[in-house]
Amino acid sequence: MAGKPKLHYFDARGRMEAIRWLLAAAGVEFEEKLLESSEDLDKLRHDGSLLFQQVPMIEIDGMKLVQTRAILNYIATKYDLYGKDMKERALIDMYTEGVADLGEMILLLPLCPPDQKNAKLTLIRERTTNRYLPAFEKVLKSHGQDYLVGNKLSKADIHLVELLYYVEELDSSLLANFPLLKGLKTRVSNLPAVKKFLQPGSQRKPPGTEKTLEQARKIFKF
Image (cartoon, rainbow, N blue to C red; front, side):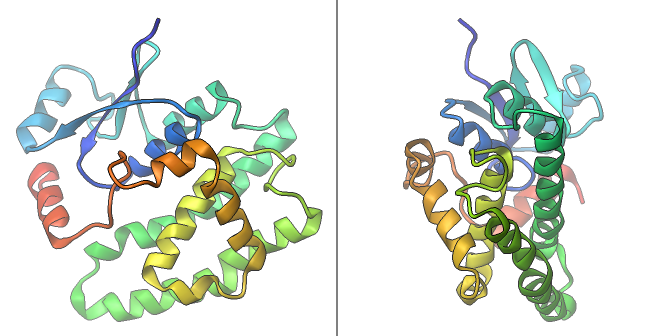
């Protein structure tokens, strides 16, 4: 029997959190090897574990996979969260890329210079309520089904719900005018595997702090 997937990253959300969410939603237990110093990262680089010298990296099925999208696509394919045919996969990819666009803005917010933060927050709020959430609400309304693609849970639903939690952390009022998205969030959050992941004490990471940012600077030297 294959061992549990092993995730290599530091103790924060960053670019690993979507991987944690997807594995958890698939009901897959995983281990984490947390980087605590730049030396830990250098060790992975020097032993050939990181093809492009970067984390996230996940050990799974005898492979050391890097690049977040490649990892997510492998997990989604392995655990039947990637549609039934090429057309469904194309839609799932399209929606996932939209999620990633807004998610990237939120992810990089802590790195924004203090004098630019308010402007960046205003832009994120505007894009959230005028571009991204209306698009996903429209998709759900267009077919009246429980999930984004094929009336079946896919990686697109999981990534979107993860994003909705981050949007709520920024400003809980931003979801107010999107009842179908709120319904999707509740539906996915109540799936047993996801519900377990959302409980205190799980491997889900909390919002970043100044301490998290300082740790990232120490490890990644930026």
